Image (cartoon, rainbow, N blue to C red; front, side):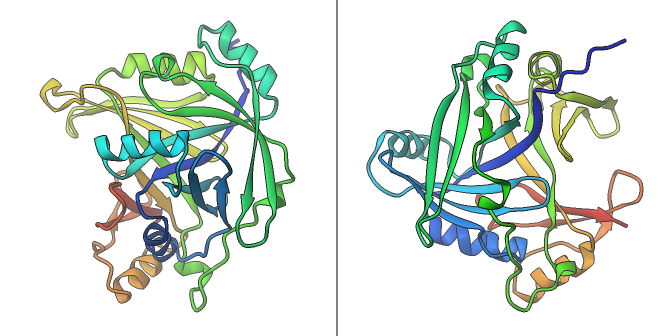
Length: 293
């Protein structure tokens, strides 16, 4: 019987690196059809964020807003790579136990460190405990482990924009896409070392890719390796997002009516699904809507 490893319980949140927090907030409020759950600062390190809590994760718009060590590192990242997916943070129930398990499996991780953030509007405080996962252990991908220490309702669900119905809004994140030159190495990282369940591993010559689907907390991490080595990236990187909608047509029509560049709805590759492409501005992220056909 295969051992089930459950240290990672979710993709706690998805981090999007942006230059201008107000512009990015305007953009994602339009895409999601939801207002932010939180507008925060990281005291002493120079970064700020805007958060949208969805059904299965939350989205963090992350930007340099002052001087500080984290802000300097983020500015360097933005100068080198531009806006886009910065990384993911993996939810765990017990940071100390998870760190010990990762280390036992050969994934060198740091000792848990406590942190906190403050909502700049209400003054509310959220606290957490993180596990550093050095990039030389994660094939260059930015990932952390996190154990929330505050009650779940400390970050409330992102409310609907006035005039937008639930059917017209994004409800969750369906999947995050990682591009890789080496699917086997990613299989070892996400599956063997992090212990995330591999739901599907298939090769599709007609699409020119091998795909791995790791699933946790109702969200999928999709790893894609192009079969043509000339088209493969030189190194792993987070690439795209798929937003879940219960009614893709309703969300698509709302975006189009607001002047957004969005494709027509068409059947998805997965049987029984509908998809639509949201074209830029998406802060550098290839983006689709997906939901039931």
